[in-house]
Length: 568
Image 1 (cartoon, helix red, strand yellow):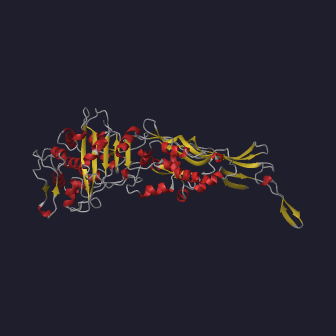
Image 2: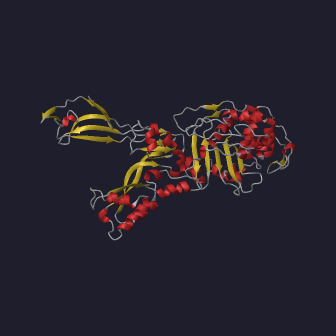
Image 3: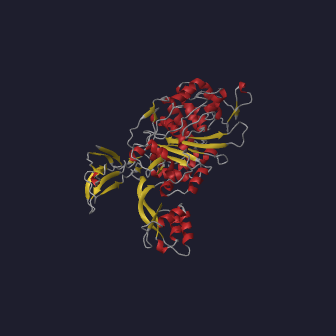
């Protein structure tokens, strides 16, 4: 019995070999059918591969996000190259398409190449890349042909979300040793391309067969069928995604837009970004180096990280304190000026930007974004109770979401260091760090009546509650009404978001990032959070946006027009 494993599948068969004596030695009577029983001397063994197509990724409206689309293939016609400038022209083309001169010359030197034939260089460019098209077509003998390839339709606008595929490496081959990958395979490296790899990858089919001398198929020895990958539809709205990215692309930041009643993610932006098409069309070593050396970190996925929330955290402190009865909605904490401290704090004090003559209660403290009020609120709640409240909101937990997110945290190992840390945490400073997607889930409780929805990215997913009844109904109503006034009241910190006919609740936040109280060189993060005030609003979007380095750029007010653009 002969058995073997092949690319097309396992083969086993019985055969008989004969030996004849010749001058005292036994020698094999060789015939071709010793290889395969039905193989004759004039036959050939052939292998035919059928490609399995990688599945597409679509947005909620059926628009292509990632999938097969038309691109331009670069080719050369050797006989049409300018003989006098040939070498210089090849160098120029190599630089334009990110290919080595040696690789181009190797293509032109293949045995089948003739002067009048098109020689594909194995590099494609986007149909919309007018500059590259123009530069290539000014070179004699260079042309462009329309072909199909995998395309990232939104390009940089959704790179952190979609990710990209690229050539499989040795480590990946070892990890997927039994799954049919070959050295020529491409695999999802990051983003949804990686997360969905098992479902959307195409599996090539292969047929091993005997061909007779006339070129006819004589016998199929074994074969496996090709399988196309699954098409996956995401909850993403391409229009919102692109609009947000266009407003954010020159900054370092991230934004999440969620349908608060369901948890569907409508947009997920990280900026600055990179073009995932580069990895399909051909990424030069120089471009790869530039991406990795860029101080703005375009390949860093900001929506997976955690950040100091600043004043955008204050509604959470208010809702927890009201829910556990640490204070009431109308309780007046009294005037504190622009600086306040406990007697035992030595030189440390909490500062706030403005004073107001209205009572220091929940509503006014949110409208005027009063740091001192929320420092006092945290102390009234108490470190142990406040910490337990944050844990019920998912702090310290891995959030159930397609992307692995950094867990939100506070204090040291989910416990406040001391009373000063507790006070600072009350207004979103101290050691509080929040993931923006987690932030959106917490804020969804103000829309749903207390339930934090589980964010998700696939349309086929059923909406689920992550945390139930995290705030009391009275606390929700009080905080939401106050956040409406943050927008509606002319003194509210978010008033410039005000859009006629649109009723929303919002909160600004400017988080200071510095090494010490005396640090004057530290930077600031600008936050803006907004959600519909009731279910009658036409745009049921809950948006959390953060921009880095807003110091000397009006803090959180720099972020408001960015978010406003998707509601107008």
